[in-house]
Image (cartoon, rainbow, N blue to C red):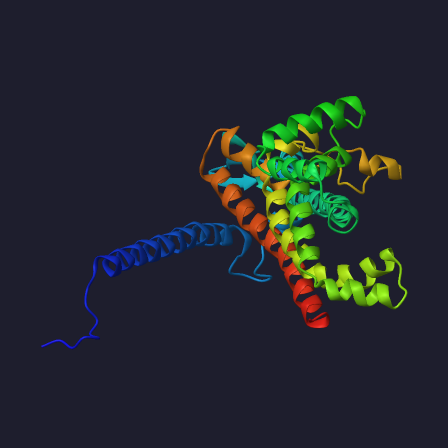
Length: 343
C-alpha cells in the first residue's frame, strides 16, 4: 500500500516530462545537425587546405590569387595547371601536341585576396560600429532623460535589428556608393556593415552599462569626479565584457554577409591587393575580394565540377577559421576584462 507522500503520477507531471523530452530531443537534434554541417566542412575543406607532405599546408591555396584551371592532355599526359603555369608551359613547349584542353574558372590558385578582404571588412566595420554604438549607448544610458522621445528612439533601434541585410545593402549603395561618390570600395562596405550591426551593439552596450551598480556612479560623483570621469573610470571598464559579447555576435554577422558587400565593397576579381596602390586615399576607395562573395560566385555563378567543389569546401573551411579567430580574440579580451574588473 502506498504511503501519503509517495511519488504518484499526475497529469501535470506527465505533461512536464513530455515537455522535457521534447525540448531535450530538439536541443540534441540541433547539436547533431550542427556537428554534421561543420564536420562536413572541416573534413572536405581540410582536404583542400592540408596535405600529407611537407609543409603539410597547401600554401598555394592560402597565399596565391584565384586563377583559371587548365586541364590539358599533352603528349599523352594529363596535366593540371593554373593560368600562369599554363602560359609558361606553352612558351617553353611550343611544339607540344595538345590532345585535349579544358578550362575551369576560379578552380586554380588560391584565395589569399579573399582572406585579406574579409579581414579588412570585418576590422574596419567593427571599429566604426563599436565607436558609434558605444557613444550612442553612453548617451542613452547616462545622459538621456526618460521620456516618450527616448523610448521611441530605443524602439526604432530595436526594429532596425530585424531589417534584412539586402535592405542595408541597397541603403549603402544609394548613400555611400552613389550619393557620397565613394563607389564600390572598402569605405562604402565598412559603413554599410557597421550600420547593419549598430542596433545590436547599441542595445547590448546600453544594457551592459545599466547593469553596473548605481553605487559606482554615486561614489565617484561624491568624491568630486565629473560625469564624464565617472563614465570613463567607473562605468565603461565594468561594461566592457558585455560590450565585447555583442561584438562577438556582430563579427559573425558582418563576416558572413554577402548581399551588402555585393553592392558596396566586393569585386569578383581584382588584380591588385589592397596595399598595392599608389596613394593612401586609394586604399580606402578601392573594392576588395571577400570570402563569402567568392564562395557565392564559385558555388552559383559558374558551371559546377569536381575542381570548383574543392575550392568551395576549402573556401568555406578557411572562412570559418578566419571568423573563429577574430571572434576568439574578442572572447579572450572579454575574459581578461572580467578578471580585471570584478564587482
